[in-house]
Length: 582
Image (tube, rainbow, N blue to C red; front, side, top):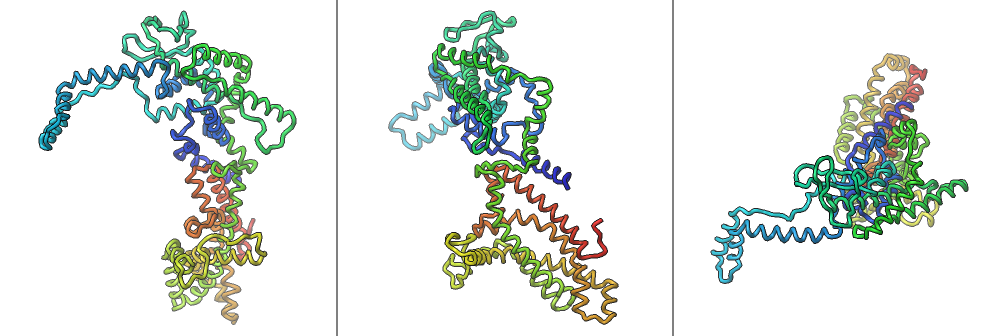
């Protein structure tokens, strides 16, 4: 049973984590935390992903292989998409737009003349239509201001997400990038650009002064000041987020004095370094002062980022979602709901009581009605009772539960002020339970549950009764039943004492697979009658991508399935002496 549960947990984990989308996408418009957002937004989203392990790889962690070039590439993609200009960039683009407009008018002189003619007063409708048709038929040369092309939105999103998720792993690289990143472009305008560090050059350029072309690797380059400034800015912004350590003690947890002191140190440091940023338009002195703070901090904090080969190997397996998930599962911790911000166990327990009441009562009624009908149909095989029971139950089976529920809610409640307004429209109970006695509360709940119970029960009558009928027909033809009749026993003793007991085996098999209904609930019925049960909870969890609740419900349903099968096997030995548990 335990190996089966482990495999079920692995399968559920795989399905959930391979599903498209991200539960954090609703936290901002772009679908991820942007590197140029304010500190509070960045920290809130980082904590969200850290708390739910969404910042970790799924199965194996190979982030130890990351290089500085990987970080530079992602920051370059984000910088190319930034709308905020550096000093002088807006003016340069304005000049480019004006030049492009003048050149466009020259290149499209015929089109410009025709547009001017269209604006002349006194043109009649026919002349305007003729000129408009002629204008639409002409080819226009489109010229845009010269500006760097922006990357695709998908590429920007992936870069933002990766840089955020890499966390502390890339802090040493971010320090190096903030200190001296340079973006070079070929001076002749041909070929690919180059990213390097200022230390790779003979003399570090001063970005606050006009930049002359430089020689590197046998080729002339010009410094792309816009990208250089933005990438350094993004590196500092990311440092203010990625460098923050996880707190030792969470809210509500008990801890020793040493752990609380360590927690205070972490919180104090996180609050301090979160302020070490600068604006794009900041002066060179302010930028240098901020980078100097980070250099001093990293000199002291460098041992945190050193890893031994053994530690690196361990992190490959332990710094993953799967490891955290299985570790929590072993101690029966299903995590915290991203929708309700509370432990999954608490959320499930709140909704489970409604589904248990409905499911157990429905299951009991279904068997209480179906088994006698199945016995009657088997005893009166191919007679009027057999055919009548089968016809009636299959007619009920053909009626969809949502159709019957809607009809009952329309004509048997006070929803439309019907003359048969006998039952409440929806809900599990009315009034304040604290103001009711126990019997009043049970009566109120039962009154609310009559219509949902009818809708949940009638659909299963046909299947269960046919199982009972088929199982009993096989037993009635057995030799020991004919022997009992030959002894002169009354028919009802032959049926009820000898036949029915052994004919229950198919019913017990079916009963074993009905236990998961206790956790699954009825989505449609719960929705129609506004019952806040497990079915409605599952729909809510799927809509809001609340992975922990989904996995919790599926795991509990899997456990109940295994328990149901086990109980069925035990029940076989109780009803049939020929079956042994050995």
